[in-house]
Length: 248
Image (cartoon, rainbow, N blue to C red; front, side, top):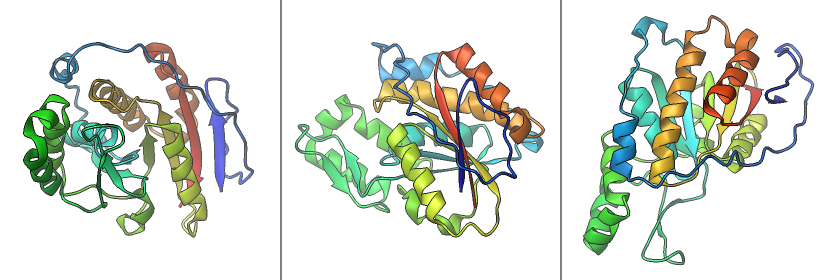
């Protein structure tokens, strides 16, 4: 079961209702591209605003396609600030850029980031340094052991909030939740923040995801305030969000 809403003009959330609401797909928010380096973006967004640990009461999941770039940037930032956070991918395999578009590097989920790092460094250390893949993998292996697949995470327990970074991933997460045995009837908020899959946009998207999670964690009851949180976020950051409520 799933309640789907389209911000900013949404009806009040009625968690007790099991009626399904459809919503047209949002177009990409078309965020202005930034022509600056991965390191410079990290410097720009390096301001840290931490909430007291006692306030951080929700459990978060960050989800992209391969659990490499966008979800791991957000995982890194939220973990640094003390959030209870995990991250996942929804693809069949983990894909990283190769020498050409037709030659990606493909790995199975569960392959350690360190193994990928050593493999690509052996193949062409200069190429993968230059395109930011080796620095990305080095960051990742400092966060957790290996990429994980969302569809295989039932043993990890329920999350309160899931943030995706691509509408296709958003749809796959909702489809998977809908197909699970929903015995707990515990609500989970699923939000899509559209972010292009490159290092610069991932750094910006990670910071925005952190800000959004701080807003959610600071509220007494997100079910009562989610419309205002989403609306204010969209106005302040000029990013459109698509969100839904599903259940465990």
